[in-house]
Amino acid sequence: MDFKLELEKQGRLGKQAARRLAVMASGEKNAALLAMADALQAKQMVILQANAEDVARAEQRGISAALLDRLRLNASRIADMAEGLRQVASLPDPIGEVLGMWRRPNGLEIGKVRVPLGVIGMIYEARPNVTVDAAGLCLKSGNAVLLRGGSEAISSNLAMLRVLVESGEAAGLPAGAIQMVTTTDREAVQAMLRLNRYLDVIIPRGGAGLIRTVVENSTVPVIETGTGVCHTYVDDGADLAMAEEIAFNAKVSRPSVCNAMETLLVHRCVAKAFLPKMMERYHAAGVELRGCPETQKYHQAVLPVTEADWATEYHDLILSIRVVEDLDTALEHIARYSTKHSEAIVTRSYERARRFQREVDAAAVYVNASTRFSDGFEFGFGAEIGISTQKLHARGPMGLAELTSTKYIVSGDGQIR
Image (cartoon, rainbow, N blue to C red):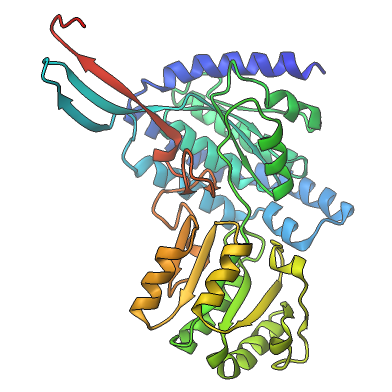
Protein backbone atom coordinates (compact mmCIF):
# COMPACT_ATOMS: atom_id res chain seq x y z
CA MET A 1 0.00 0.00 0.00
CA ASP A 2 1.16 3.54 -0.79
CA PHE A 3 0.54 5.04 2.66
CA LYS A 4 1.41 8.56 1.56
CA LEU A 5 -1.14 8.65 -1.28
CA GLU A 6 -3.88 7.15 0.88
CA LEU A 7 -3.20 9.55 3.74
CA GLU A 8 -3.11 12.55 1.40
CA LYS A 9 -6.50 11.48 0.05
CA GLN A 10 -7.84 11.31 3.60
CA GLY A 11 -6.20 14.63 4.39
CA ARG A 12 -7.88 16.38 1.47
CA LEU A 13 -11.24 14.93 2.45
CA GLY A 14 -10.65 16.03 6.05
CA LYS A 15 -9.86 19.58 4.94
CA GLN A 16 -13.11 19.74 2.97
CA ALA A 17 -15.06 18.40 5.94
CA ALA A 18 -13.38 20.87 8.31
CA ARG A 19 -14.63 23.83 6.27
CA ARG A 20 -18.19 22.56 6.63
CA LEU A 21 -17.82 21.65 10.30
CA ALA A 22 -16.46 25.09 11.17
CA VAL A 23 -19.78 26.71 10.25
CA MET A 24 -22.21 23.98 11.32
CA ALA A 25 -24.87 25.12 13.75
CA SER A 26 -24.71 23.81 17.30
CA GLY A 27 -28.02 22.02 16.87
CA GLU A 28 -26.72 20.12 13.84
CA LYS A 29 -23.60 18.99 15.68
CA ASN A 30 -25.57 18.01 18.76
CA ALA A 31 -28.03 15.97 16.71
CA ALA A 32 -25.14 14.05 15.15
CA LEU A 33 -23.59 13.41 18.56
CA LEU A 34 -26.85 12.07 19.98
CA ALA A 35 -27.36 9.86 16.93
CA MET A 36 -23.85 8.48 17.33
CA ALA A 37 -24.45 7.78 21.03
CA ASP A 38 -27.68 5.89 20.30
CA ALA A 39 -26.02 3.91 17.51
CA LEU A 40 -23.15 2.79 19.75
CA GLN A 41 -25.56 1.17 22.16
CA ALA A 42 -27.89 -0.15 19.47
CA LYS A 43 -24.97 -1.91 17.77
CA GLN A 44 -23.01 -2.87 20.86
CA MET A 45 -23.07 -6.58 20.05
CA VAL A 46 -21.20 -5.94 16.78
CA ILE A 47 -18.65 -3.85 18.68
CA LEU A 48 -18.25 -6.41 21.46
CA GLN A 49 -17.73 -9.19 18.94
CA ALA A 50 -14.97 -7.20 17.26
CA ASN A 51 -13.46 -6.40 20.65
CA ALA A 52 -13.45 -10.09 21.57
CA GLU A 53 -11.28 -10.70 18.51
CA ASP A 54 -8.82 -8.05 19.69
CA VAL A 55 -8.73 -9.43 23.23
CA ALA A 56 -8.15 -12.99 22.00
CA ARG A 57 -5.21 -11.87 19.84
CA ALA A 58 -3.79 -9.85 22.73
CA GLU A 59 -4.02 -12.79 25.13
CA GLN A 60 -2.22 -15.00 22.63
CA ARG A 61 0.54 -12.40 22.43
CA GLY A 62 0.80 -12.35 26.22
CA ILE A 63 0.27 -8.63 26.76
CA SER A 64 0.05 -7.41 30.34
CA ALA A 65 -3.10 -7.48 32.44
CA ALA A 66 -3.05 -3.68 32.57
CA LEU A 67 -3.09 -3.35 28.78
CA LEU A 68 -5.79 -6.01 28.54
CA ASP A 69 -7.89 -3.93 30.93
CA ARG A 70 -7.50 -0.89 28.70
CA LEU A 71 -8.39 -2.91 25.62
CA ARG A 72 -11.40 -4.84 26.89
CA LEU A 73 -14.89 -3.45 26.30
CA ASN A 74 -18.19 -4.46 27.85
CA ALA A 75 -21.75 -3.15 27.84
CA SER A 76 -21.00 -0.81 30.73
CA ARG A 77 -17.99 0.75 29.01
CA ILE A 78 -19.90 1.22 25.77
CA ALA A 79 -22.69 2.86 27.77
CA ASP A 80 -20.08 5.17 29.32
CA MET A 81 -18.78 6.12 25.86
CA ALA A 82 -22.30 6.85 24.68
CA GLU A 83 -22.97 8.93 27.80
CA GLY A 84 -19.77 10.85 27.10
CA LEU A 85 -21.12 11.79 23.66
CA ARG A 86 -24.42 12.89 25.19
CA GLN A 87 -22.62 15.01 27.75
CA VAL A 88 -20.53 16.65 25.02
CA ALA A 89 -23.76 17.40 23.15
CA SER A 90 -25.16 19.10 26.26
CA LEU A 91 -22.13 21.36 26.71
CA PRO A 92 -22.00 24.93 25.37
CA ASP A 93 -20.57 25.19 21.86
CA PRO A 94 -17.17 26.90 22.08
CA ILE A 95 -17.11 27.97 18.43
CA GLY A 96 -17.89 31.64 17.94
CA GLU A 97 -17.50 32.45 21.64
CA VAL A 98 -16.39 36.07 21.95
CA LEU A 99 -13.40 36.24 24.27
CA GLY A 100 -13.06 40.01 24.10
CA MET A 101 -14.24 43.07 22.19
CA TRP A 102 -12.86 46.59 22.21
CA ARG A 103 -12.85 49.82 20.22
CA ARG A 104 -9.64 51.59 19.19
CA PRO A 105 -9.30 55.40 19.18
CA ASN A 106 -9.49 55.35 15.38
CA GLY A 107 -12.92 53.72 15.54
CA LEU A 108 -11.90 50.17 14.66
CA GLU A 109 -13.87 47.53 16.55
CA ILE A 110 -11.71 44.46 17.34
CA GLY A 111 -13.05 41.18 18.63
CA LYS A 112 -11.38 37.90 19.57
CA VAL A 113 -13.41 34.72 18.96
CA ARG A 114 -12.91 30.97 19.23
CA VAL A 115 -12.47 28.98 16.01
CA PRO A 116 -11.69 25.30 15.33
CA LEU A 117 -8.11 24.09 14.95
CA GLY A 118 -9.05 22.46 11.63
CA VAL A 119 -8.03 18.83 11.05
CA ILE A 120 -6.73 16.97 14.11
CA GLY A 121 -4.63 13.83 13.90
CA MET A 122 -4.98 11.43 16.85
CA ILE A 123 -2.42 8.67 17.42
CA TYR A 124 -3.19 6.36 20.33
CA GLU A 125 -2.63 2.87 21.67
CA ALA A 126 -4.80 0.05 23.03
CA ARG A 127 -7.71 2.17 24.30
CA PRO A 128 -10.70 1.87 21.97
CA ASN A 129 -12.70 4.38 24.02
CA VAL A 130 -10.38 7.09 22.65
CA THR A 131 -11.94 6.53 19.22
CA VAL A 132 -15.31 7.70 20.52
CA ASP A 133 -14.02 10.43 22.84
CA ALA A 134 -11.87 11.98 20.12
CA ALA A 135 -14.60 11.83 17.49
CA GLY A 136 -17.14 13.47 19.80
CA LEU A 137 -14.93 16.26 21.06
CA CYS A 138 -13.55 17.06 17.62
CA LEU A 139 -17.04 17.17 16.12
CA LYS A 140 -18.46 19.48 18.82
CA SER A 141 -15.48 21.83 18.51
CA GLY A 142 -15.87 22.00 14.72
CA ASN A 143 -12.81 19.94 13.81
CA ALA A 144 -12.38 17.02 11.43
CA VAL A 145 -10.33 14.14 12.86
CA LEU A 146 -8.01 11.49 11.43
CA LEU A 147 -7.62 8.63 13.91
CA ARG A 148 -4.82 6.11 14.15
CA GLY A 149 -5.38 3.61 16.94
CA GLY A 150 -3.08 0.85 18.10
CA SER A 151 -2.85 -2.47 16.31
CA GLU A 152 -4.12 -4.23 19.44
CA ALA A 153 -7.55 -2.59 19.05
CA ILE A 154 -7.87 -2.53 15.26
CA SER A 155 -11.05 -4.65 15.06
CA SER A 156 -12.76 -2.68 17.84
CA ASN A 157 -11.76 0.66 16.36
CA LEU A 158 -12.93 -0.19 12.85
CA ALA A 159 -16.25 -1.49 14.16
CA MET A 160 -16.86 1.69 16.16
CA LEU A 161 -15.70 3.88 13.26
CA ARG A 162 -18.33 2.32 10.98
CA VAL A 163 -21.03 2.94 13.58
CA LEU A 164 -19.96 6.55 14.17
CA VAL A 165 -19.58 7.42 10.48
CA GLU A 166 -22.84 5.82 9.36
CA SER A 167 -24.92 7.37 12.13
CA GLY A 168 -23.11 10.71 11.98
CA GLU A 169 -23.43 11.14 8.22
CA ALA A 170 -27.07 10.06 8.34
CA ALA A 171 -27.56 12.94 10.83
CA GLY A 172 -25.88 15.47 8.54
CA LEU A 173 -22.11 15.24 9.09
CA PRO A 174 -20.00 15.82 5.97
CA ALA A 175 -18.01 12.93 4.53
CA GLY A 176 -14.50 12.93 5.98
CA ALA A 177 -15.46 14.44 9.33
CA ILE A 178 -14.33 11.24 11.08
CA GLN A 179 -11.69 9.07 9.41
CA MET A 180 -9.26 6.39 10.47
CA VAL A 181 -5.94 5.04 9.24
CA THR A 182 -7.01 1.46 8.62
CA THR A 183 -3.58 -0.17 8.31
CA THR A 184 -1.59 -1.29 11.33
CA ASP A 185 1.72 -0.82 9.50
CA ARG A 186 3.92 1.51 11.53
CA GLU A 187 5.15 3.21 8.37
CA ALA A 188 1.72 4.78 8.10
CA VAL A 189 2.38 6.64 11.36
CA GLN A 190 5.59 8.09 9.95
CA ALA A 191 3.70 9.25 6.86
CA MET A 192 0.96 10.75 9.03
CA LEU A 193 3.54 12.74 11.01
CA ARG A 194 4.44 14.61 7.80
CA LEU A 195 0.98 15.59 6.59
CA ASN A 196 1.63 19.29 7.12
CA ARG A 197 -0.59 20.32 4.21
CA TYR A 198 -3.64 18.67 5.72
CA LEU A 199 -3.21 18.18 9.48
CA ASP A 200 -3.22 21.25 11.70
CA VAL A 201 -2.13 19.42 14.84
CA ILE A 202 -1.30 15.90 16.04
CA ILE A 203 -2.17 14.65 19.53
CA PRO A 204 -0.46 11.44 20.70
CA ARG A 205 -2.09 9.54 23.54
CA GLY A 206 -0.30 6.55 24.99
CA GLY A 207 2.93 5.44 26.60
CA ALA A 208 6.21 7.28 26.79
CA GLY A 209 7.60 5.50 23.72
CA LEU A 210 4.72 6.53 21.47
CA ILE A 211 4.78 10.12 22.67
CA ARG A 212 8.55 10.37 22.22
CA THR A 213 8.31 8.97 18.68
CA VAL A 214 5.66 11.52 17.70
CA VAL A 215 7.43 14.50 19.28
CA GLU A 216 10.80 13.62 17.74
CA ASN A 217 9.54 12.81 14.23
CA SER A 218 6.51 14.98 13.54
CA THR A 219 6.70 17.99 11.26
CA VAL A 220 3.06 18.70 12.19
CA PRO A 221 2.62 20.71 15.42
CA VAL A 222 2.15 18.38 18.42
CA ILE A 223 0.14 18.77 21.61
CA GLU A 224 2.02 16.44 23.93
CA THR A 225 -0.01 14.32 26.30
CA GLY A 226 2.22 12.95 28.98
CA THR A 227 2.91 9.92 31.05
CA GLY A 228 1.72 9.91 34.63
CA VAL A 229 4.23 9.28 37.39
CA CYS A 230 1.79 10.62 39.97
CA HIS A 231 2.50 11.02 43.70
CA THR A 232 0.42 11.21 46.87
CA TYR A 233 2.09 12.77 49.91
CA VAL A 234 0.64 11.96 53.35
CA ASP A 235 1.60 14.84 55.63
CA ASP A 236 2.06 14.58 59.38
CA GLY A 237 -1.04 16.73 59.70
CA ALA A 238 -3.19 14.31 57.70
CA ASP A 239 -6.43 12.64 58.66
CA LEU A 240 -5.02 9.10 58.37
CA ALA A 241 -8.38 7.47 57.70
CA MET A 242 -8.91 9.88 54.82
CA ALA A 243 -5.35 9.33 53.63
CA GLU A 244 -5.86 5.57 53.56
CA GLU A 245 -8.95 5.84 51.36
CA ILE A 246 -7.34 8.34 49.00
CA ALA A 247 -4.11 6.39 48.67
CA PHE A 248 -5.94 3.11 48.08
CA ASN A 249 -8.23 4.61 45.45
CA ALA A 250 -5.36 6.38 43.67
CA LYS A 251 -3.49 3.11 43.16
CA VAL A 252 -6.03 0.32 43.05
CA SER A 253 -9.23 1.65 41.46
CA ARG A 254 -7.74 1.41 37.96
CA PRO A 255 -3.95 1.03 37.92
CA SER A 256 -3.63 0.97 34.12
CA VAL A 257 -4.53 4.64 33.60
CA CYS A 258 -2.25 7.67 33.59
CA ASN A 259 -3.84 9.35 36.63
CA ALA A 260 -3.15 6.38 38.91
CA MET A 261 -0.64 6.95 41.71
CA GLU A 262 2.77 5.35 41.21
CA THR A 263 4.57 6.64 44.35
CA LEU A 264 3.32 7.11 47.90
CA LEU A 265 5.29 9.53 50.09
CA VAL A 266 4.68 9.43 53.85
CA HIS A 267 5.91 11.87 56.51
CA ARG A 268 8.19 10.12 59.01
CA CYS A 269 6.08 11.23 61.99
CA VAL A 270 3.02 9.28 60.80
CA ALA A 271 4.75 6.37 59.07
CA LYS A 272 4.43 3.96 62.02
CA ALA A 273 0.76 4.76 62.53
CA PHE A 274 -0.14 4.77 58.83
CA LEU A 275 1.99 2.37 56.83
CA PRO A 276 1.42 -1.07 58.44
CA LYS A 277 -2.34 -0.99 57.95
CA MET A 278 -2.06 0.74 54.57
CA MET A 279 0.44 -1.78 53.24
CA GLU A 280 -1.55 -4.74 54.52
CA ARG A 281 -4.56 -3.42 52.60
CA TYR A 282 -2.45 -3.03 49.46
CA HIS A 283 -1.01 -6.51 49.91
CA ALA A 284 -4.48 -8.01 50.23
CA ALA A 285 -5.47 -6.25 46.99
CA GLY A 286 -2.54 -7.81 45.13
CA VAL A 287 -0.34 -4.73 44.96
CA GLU A 288 3.39 -5.38 44.69
CA LEU A 289 5.14 -3.02 47.12
CA ARG A 290 8.59 -1.55 46.58
CA GLY A 291 9.96 0.67 49.29
CA CYS A 292 12.85 2.51 50.85
CA PRO A 293 14.71 0.83 53.76
CA GLU A 294 12.50 2.42 56.40
CA THR A 295 9.35 1.39 54.56
CA GLN A 296 10.53 -2.22 54.54
CA LYS A 297 10.41 -2.28 58.36
CA TYR A 298 6.62 -2.06 58.33
CA HIS A 299 5.72 -5.05 56.12
CA GLN A 300 7.51 -8.24 55.17
CA ALA A 301 6.28 -8.14 51.56
CA VAL A 302 8.02 -4.86 50.65
CA LEU A 303 10.74 -5.28 48.02
CA PRO A 304 13.74 -2.91 47.83
CA VAL A 305 12.97 0.07 45.62
CA THR A 306 15.42 1.07 42.88
CA GLU A 307 16.28 4.46 41.44
CA ALA A 308 14.51 3.47 38.22
CA ASP A 309 11.31 2.69 40.14
CA TRP A 310 10.88 6.28 41.23
CA ALA A 311 10.65 7.35 37.57
CA THR A 312 8.51 4.45 36.33
CA GLU A 313 4.88 4.60 35.27
CA TYR A 314 3.91 1.03 36.12
CA HIS A 315 0.41 0.86 34.60
CA ASP A 316 -0.02 -2.06 37.00
CA LEU A 317 -0.63 -3.06 40.62
CA ILE A 318 2.88 -2.01 41.65
CA LEU A 319 3.64 0.85 44.04
CA SER A 320 6.77 2.62 45.18
CA ILE A 321 6.76 3.93 48.77
CA ARG A 322 9.12 6.35 50.49
CA VAL A 323 9.21 7.71 54.02
CA VAL A 324 10.28 11.37 53.90
CA GLU A 325 11.51 13.78 56.56
CA ASP A 326 9.07 16.59 55.86
CA LEU A 327 7.15 18.54 53.24
CA ASP A 328 10.37 19.97 51.81
CA THR A 329 11.71 16.48 51.11
CA ALA A 330 8.42 15.46 49.52
CA LEU A 331 8.48 18.53 47.28
CA GLU A 332 12.06 17.79 46.26
CA HIS A 333 11.19 14.18 45.40
CA ILE A 334 8.19 15.25 43.32
CA ALA A 335 10.19 17.93 41.52
CA ARG A 336 12.80 15.33 40.58
CA TYR A 337 10.59 12.45 39.44
CA SER A 338 7.22 13.93 38.54
CA THR A 339 6.08 13.89 34.92
CA LYS A 340 3.99 16.99 35.73
CA HIS A 341 0.68 15.16 35.39
CA SER A 342 -1.16 14.97 38.76
CA GLU A 343 0.11 15.30 42.34
CA ALA A 344 -1.71 15.17 45.69
CA ILE A 345 -1.22 16.05 49.34
CA VAL A 346 -3.33 14.80 52.25
CA THR A 347 -3.13 17.25 55.15
CA ARG A 348 -5.16 19.21 57.69
CA SER A 349 -2.79 22.17 57.40
CA TYR A 350 -4.17 25.01 55.30
CA GLU A 351 -0.70 26.54 55.03
CA ARG A 352 0.93 23.32 53.78
CA ALA A 353 -1.94 22.64 51.40
CA ARG A 354 -1.60 26.07 49.82
CA ARG A 355 2.18 25.74 49.68
CA PHE A 356 1.89 22.35 47.96
CA GLN A 357 -0.48 23.71 45.35
CA ARG A 358 1.69 26.77 44.83
CA GLU A 359 5.06 25.00 44.50
CA VAL A 360 4.23 21.74 42.70
CA ASP A 361 4.59 22.12 38.94
CA ALA A 362 1.94 19.80 37.49
CA ALA A 363 -1.15 19.97 35.31
CA ALA A 364 -3.38 19.13 38.30
CA VAL A 365 -2.50 19.56 41.98
CA TYR A 366 -4.85 18.08 44.60
CA VAL A 367 -5.46 18.65 48.28
CA ASN A 368 -7.26 15.83 50.13
CA ALA A 369 -8.47 14.10 46.97
CA SER A 370 -7.37 11.25 44.70
CA THR A 371 -5.33 11.89 41.57
CA ARG A 372 -7.82 9.62 39.78
CA PHE A 373 -10.02 12.70 39.24
CA SER A 374 -7.69 14.00 36.50
CA ASP A 375 -10.12 13.20 33.76
CA GLY A 376 -12.21 15.24 31.35
CA PHE A 377 -15.45 13.51 32.36
CA GLU A 378 -14.76 14.11 36.07
CA PHE A 379 -13.86 17.77 35.38
CA GLY A 380 -17.21 18.28 33.66
CA PHE A 381 -15.89 18.37 30.10
CA GLY A 382 -18.05 15.42 28.98
CA ALA A 383 -14.93 13.60 27.79
CA GLU A 384 -11.32 14.40 27.06
CA ILE A 385 -9.03 14.01 24.11
CA GLY A 386 -6.04 13.55 26.39
CA ILE A 387 -4.24 15.06 29.36
CA SER A 388 -1.56 17.51 28.33
CA THR A 389 1.49 17.83 30.55
CA GLN A 390 3.09 20.58 28.47
CA LYS A 391 2.33 24.29 28.79
CA LEU A 392 1.68 25.12 25.12
CA HIS A 393 -1.02 25.10 23.73
CA ALA A 394 -3.03 23.41 26.49
CA ARG A 395 -2.44 21.83 29.90
CA GLY A 396 -4.35 19.21 31.88
CA PRO A 397 -7.49 17.39 30.70
CA MET A 398 -8.27 18.68 27.22
CA GLY A 399 -11.92 19.33 26.53
CA LEU A 400 -13.66 21.46 23.93
CA ALA A 401 -11.95 24.78 24.59
CA GLU A 402 -8.51 23.17 24.23
CA LEU A 403 -9.44 22.02 20.71
CA THR A 404 -9.92 25.57 19.51
CA SER A 405 -7.76 28.48 18.44
CA THR A 406 -8.73 32.13 18.11
CA LYS A 407 -9.00 34.73 15.41
CA TYR A 408 -9.50 38.48 15.45
CA ILE A 409 -12.50 40.01 13.73
CA VAL A 410 -11.97 43.69 12.89
CA SER A 411 -14.70 46.05 11.70
CA GLY A 412 -14.23 49.59 10.44
CA ASP A 413 -15.90 52.26 8.33
CA GLY A 414 -13.14 53.23 5.93
CA GLN A 415 -10.10 53.52 8.20
CA ILE A 416 -6.67 53.37 6.50
CA ARG A 417 -3.23 53.32 8.06
